[in-house]
Image 1 (cartoon, rainbow, N blue to C red):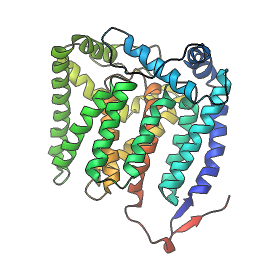
Image 2 (image 1 turned 90 degrees about the vertical axis):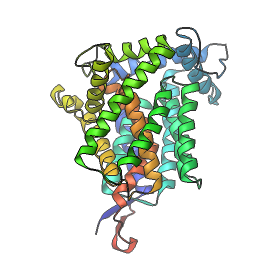
Image 3 (image 1 turned 30 degrees about the vertical axis):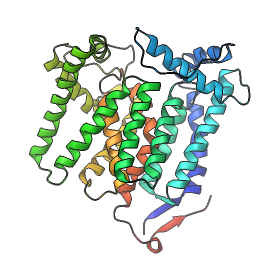
Length: 372
């Protein structure tokens, strides 16, 4: 008899996790996450008398796209500021309450009860989101796109329509939030063809072919960018070969702009962010990152291994997550940033968590814990 927890019990424990997460954020991590947070810039912009308009990030001149991202972030926060908040801390409380309520709604609506493994992953995700993301920053806006994807995947649309819908959300994010999300859209199509090509006849040699396909995909992408937009090409080279001051910096091993070497470095970075063994050498502070990432990679692997039997929603979620990971490997500067950004995929991970219910017992054989 397997233990399961109803959504209401999970939400109860989530509230405790949120309080704990905020305690960590405002104690041991206050200097880096709060005192040096981008939210102080945003609160000044929000309090400014000007009313920024929501616009496109696709601009012709240098740095205009970044300004548009900040402008869109400020515009959204201003539009939902029904309480006329003027302080950084007031906004964080507001965002924490609203965004967690959306998370609770999704958890409750997704299904009636969750297994132990699912519950642990959900609670850990909520901890990460509330330590790093649910504050006055860009991440609360970023996760809105994945809320929309969750709504699309949860709908009664056909699988084809759901795939197209999620692809278009990536395009929408590219046009209104981050230019590099066009890479996620491209990688989503790539992932679709690769998974459907090899899912029915996966061999050891298939893994080598898949890795080689990813290498060739990046090599081709960079060559196209070099011809179509040298500025974007230079930016892709810059962000992947840069170094940060973070202790968990993701540095490329060869640091070369030669596309043959660059593409190899990309493959290695992709493996490293998905399997962050090197974090274990940085001390206990980074163990939570490693544990969370380990749970995510196991989730991806389990869904890949069972791609022919998981439900259609989980398969679409798998395309979204792998595409996001492939795109992120091109620009994430450090593991802290990576964990913070991948946590916004939480609404999509829920569909992949259903893997743990592939061998479902009848409800009469399952012990449901419904006591708080």
